[in-house]
Image 1 (cartoon, rainbow, N blue to C red):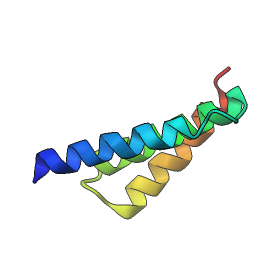
Image 2: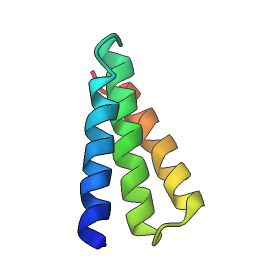
Image 3: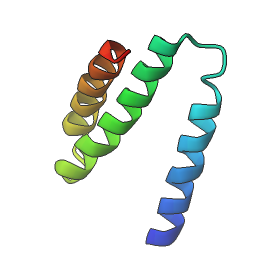
Length: 67
């Protein structure tokens, strides 16, 4: 079951990133930062909703600031 969850998460991430084709570079960076931050927040807090949302918010802000 764990293997299926990882494969599903990777497929969803790939689908999400493929939707970034029409975005500006700054928007793409923010989207990728939010995705990475959300996953990192979930992992660090054991799947907490607050950790996931907080990580996504922080990752999006950092990604938006990257040139």
